[in-house]
Amino acid sequence: MSQELSQIIKKWIEITMHKSMHNFFKFSKENDLSIHQIGALIRIYRKRDCNVSILGADMGVSSAAASQMLDRMVQLGLIERTIDPEDRRIKNFKLTEKGLDLINESFHISQSWIEDLVHALRNDEKEETIVVLNRLINLVNLNNGESNFFK
Image 1: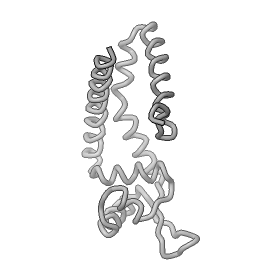
Image 2 (image 1 turned 180 degrees about the vertical axis):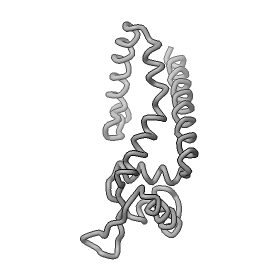
Image 3 (image 1 turned 90 degrees about the vertical axis):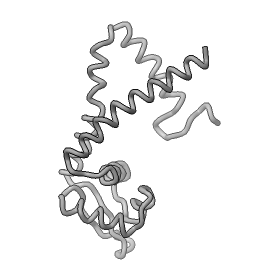
Image 4 (image 1 turned 90 degrees about the horizontal axis):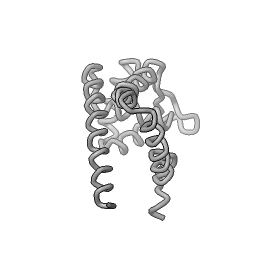
């Protein structure tokens, strides 16, 4: 039974990632943004202020490449440059209102298929799913990225 459950969970992840990523890639293409640019926007969204070195390292590109990409995003009005108050040599980046709107829209679009799925479930299935998913979330402990069952 454990192997069957493991296979079902893997299949579920594969399908949900495919659906989400398909919508996400389509959104980035429609907005003329690369996956690296969207990734940088998401990183800035999650961490607020980020500098070129951090973003470059996170994306696996040089600081020069990251800087060039970020300059384009500044020109597009998606992010703005600020000077680090503790070290004026460091330039931090934060989302503009336009950038925040774009990221929120990308999250919404990449997950839009979920509403159709929820509407297809009966009420009793919805209740069962809520219980099981809450249990899985608690086990994996998504809030801090650590898994309770791996300790």
